Image 1 (cartoon, rainbow, N blue to C red):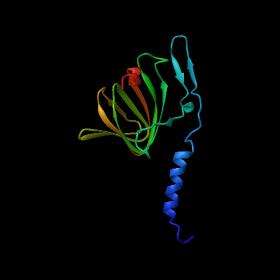
Image 2: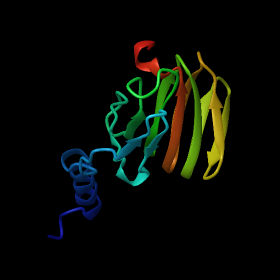
Image 3: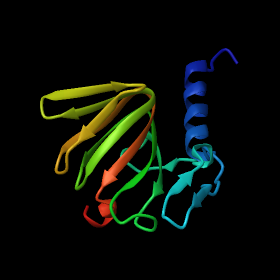
Image 4: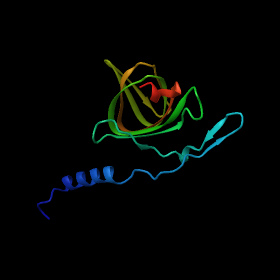
Length: 151
């Protein structure tokens, strides 16, 4: 085994694990809703799912928690990224609360960096890049909730 490059094998194994083994088990989000409309969500029950950025190798995961089904005004969820960057144009206002890691929002000629505990607001109509130099997990809120219909 002297001719085998350990770095090449390590890279192949990493790619196989990322592409062929599910990142997290599927789990139903635990929600409770009062007659008044007040809704609670057990954060630990939310499992992010792979999000296709259009770029092979990106490690981006998200899960919407509140959608049009629960609220006609806003939506929210979790997003996780690791060493990834993708472009996005927002047809809604968005507020991001960084739970863990670092999130960089790049715009024309500038960038805003948020770390754990920081909040970033992105106005409707912005063309940006979401970027994670390492791992980041953040909570997002969008207004209006029907963002998927306005893309």
